[in-house]
Each structure stands twice: as structure tokens, then as C-alpha cells.
Image 1 (cartoon, rainbow, N blue to C red):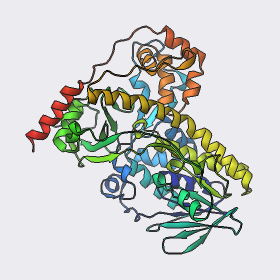
Image 2 (cartoon, rainbow, N blue to C red; image 1 turned 30 degrees about the vertical axis):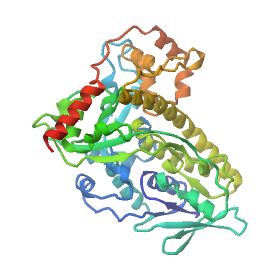
Image 3 (cartoon, one colour; image 1 turned 45 degrees about the vertical axis):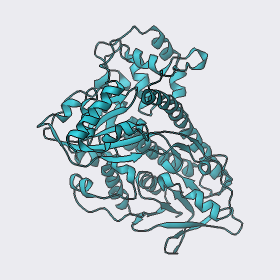
Image 4 (cartoon, rainbow, N blue to C red; image 1 turned 135 degrees about the vertical axis):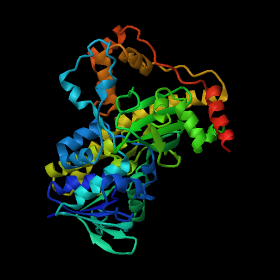
Length: 480
């Protein structure tokens, strides 16, 4: 039985453990954090500290792709999530009722999202993977390096922070945004391929709440959430498990006029001013269960060592954020990590020989999976950053670049989706990671429907920049 050692016990690492165990590997997961407490999900999630996963304190959701992976490849995790209080959100509830082709269609069953906090999903993955006879999870263990064969052409072992040598047939880097295999390769004398990066320029602020009743206070205009990315900030609410929900507010890093978002009063004022969110914050409806957590988003990154430009080292693979990072505004990180882990296992099952050809096939698969989402995130962020910068500097907003080949702009698609069910479904499938942007723009019927769509009513706009800043600043001063 071949042995896999996985560095990192978060979503990507634990999904890899499930997937590799399923194809006959004996799996050891090395996780640097302590073991989670053995309490029910509702209690553990609220008290389980994850200092090694700082982004775990931010707002998360599981898109339709992630739900599909769980349904098909890890049904116990999905079932336990549902029993543990995670709602399955029907995205078609956000399809405008008066839009063309708004009646339910056969493929609509895929358009769902799972309302679950990241720590809750991680807890379920820990327990499911840990119960498998071929999987061992070792906590409080760091990884210091990689041992290769004398020729440097194949993985031989991982070295822990305490100097322990752990033999391995394959090693999986699931160390997330740290992407430690880059350092391991350098230390082993292997040239490291260049990364591809693009700024995300996002300062995030998240707070968690508990609903006092069992019904949602208002409609979910995004199907799996409320809010949007507006002309000068982002404000989105996501339902979670066990009657929790999170609100995430995003701004440009260094925007001193919105420094009040870090405070409870300033955050609340901004959230209440965001269309659709205010009813969730009414007295008697909910109460906060966390402080305001602030974080900065790393740049969009396609890590070089995970792709086809890297000099191949058989037996070394990167998954999830150790392969690619995209802006968390899109909420697709957990879903892509789950999908990637099982695609890796499928490829290894079809090509079991641990050689250069296997490594090159994994690199191509990884590149093909993540490149479309990296490109989409980078292009979207470039335009958003320019718009937000213009709002902060009080200069004219930049013109929206028109794609080549007569393709519609994102704004035109969003407008058409409000009045056309076919356009809405196409856009939603892309946003939920079921279809790539290339697949969306390669659908001639979709493009025709966008062009033919009649004007639909626009939703209530967000406050302008100046008024929004006044709301935040006034709340901060009043409660100082």
C-alpha cells in the first residue's frame, strides 16, 4: 500500500486525505494546530481557535461546485453538515419571478449552496477523515523540509520541525497561502518556477451573528447571500450553520476614511447602510457573537511550483491555496480545494506509477483547473480597484473595458440576468464555479439571450461614497 504524507490539515489537506484513502493510499496528515475538541459542531465551531488559519475567521460559503463534490465524493460530510445545522440554500429562490424562463428546470437542482462556517466544515472533515482506517492525523506537528532521492528526482520523505524523518511515496503540500513546497524545493536545490500574481487590494472586515428565530429576516438576493460589490465598497451577508450568519465588508487597503469599519459601531453602521442587510440587524432579530475580524487579502497567485513550468519532482503535489489563490470576494476557495483534491486522486488512480509523466499530468490538470479562475479574478479585481480608487480620490470612474469579439460586459450580463432566466442561470453557474468564464462566453445561445434581453428594473443602489463615509464616521464618534 503506497503512503501519502500531507502537510496541512485544513480543507484541502483533509479532502486530499479522504480522496487518497479512497484509492488505496495509507495517509498521514501533519497538522500544526492542536486537535479540535470532541464537542457537537454547534459548540465546537464557536470555541475552536484556529490561529494557524487566520482566514478561517472570515466569511465563507460553499458554492454549488463544493456541494456537488460532497454529494458525489464525500456524502457523509454533507449529511453530517445538514444534521449539524447547515442549510442547503436553493439559489433559484433569487431568480426574478417575472423573468423569462423563470419556471424550474431540470438542471436547477445543482444550483444550491451550503450555508456553513469554514471552521464547521473543517471540523466535519477532521472527524470524517480521522475515522477512516487508513488515515492518521497527527496534530501539533510542523514540517521543516523535504527529502529527495540522491539524484533529486523523486520524493523520499518529509522532515518535521523536530527533525523526525517520515518516509513517503508522495507528499502533498496543503499548507495553504504559505505554499511551503516552494521553500522545500529551494532548500533541496531544485529551481522554483516563477509565480504569476495580480493584486487583489482588499481589506476585509467580518463579524458573526446569531439569529434569534428560525426564519430568515429577508430575501437572499444572491441566492446564497445578501448584498453585492458596489462602486466603492463590498458588503455581503452569508447564512451559516446553526442560525448563524456572517457579514463581510470590503474596502481598499489604507482607506483611512473607513478605518471605523474595524469598530463595532462603524461596522454596524456600514452593514445597515448596505441594501438588503438592515433587516437582519434589527433589534430582537439577531445579536453579534464575535468581534469585528479584520484581514488583508493576499494577491491573486498562481503558484509556479504547482504548474507545468516547474521542473518536475515526482511524488510532490500542491493542492488548494498552495496551488492557486483567488480573491475571497468570489467565495470559491473551499469549493475549488475540494474539487482539486479529488481530481488529484482520480489522476493518480489512473496513472499509479510515481514518475515524471505522472507529475507532469498533475501539473497540467492543476493549471487547467485554476487558470480560468485566476484570470477572471485578476481581471475583475483590476476594474474594481480602479473604480474604488476613483471613488476614494473623487475622480471620474474608469470606463468599463469591452471584451473583444463583441462579447458583452459583466454589467450587461448582470442587467440581462434580471429579466431572463436563461441568462441568470448561466451567470449563476459561473459564479458558483460550475462553469468557467470561457464556457459561459462560448455559449452562443447565452450570448444571444444577453443581447436580446429587455431592460429590467435596477435594484436599490448603495449609498454614495461621501454619505457612506459619514455614516461610518458618525457611528464611530458617537460610541468612542
